[in-house]
Length: 166
Image 1 (cartoon, rainbow, N blue to C red):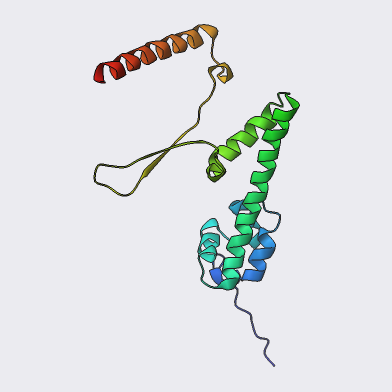
Image 2 (cartoon, helix red, strand yellow):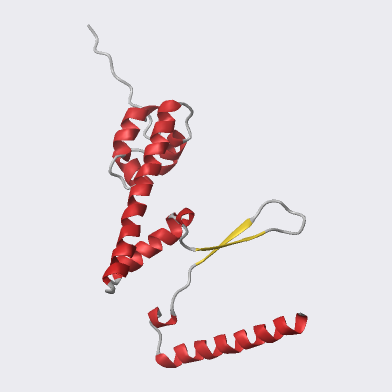
């Protein structure tokens, strides 16, 4: 009697990823796709293809991924709030939490967002700004002074331009 040789799946085949395996890989991942792909033994692109699959089971996977990200957002937001309540500068943790919230949770009101539309256009162009205090820049004092002077000149010119057009 001959032994049947089992053919291995292609390494990046989406067929190896089933919703049950994906759910298990997502749990505790903090929503980090690279971590999930490593747990599944697949590429990032294959994970993305799996997350685009149709069906209720796949939708459950997408919802769990979103919940994982929300959980990390809550932790970052709590870190920011705790540092404000304690009125103590907890440095790196607070800065990291704020960075995370600016990039991943603009929907919670973090980060500065502006929307522009082209004349006659309907699709907005989003622009995100992250402001860094001059004191936080690792620059010599003289350069910081030069930056402040340049900002004052710019603001003065802007005010003159605004008053001249009205």
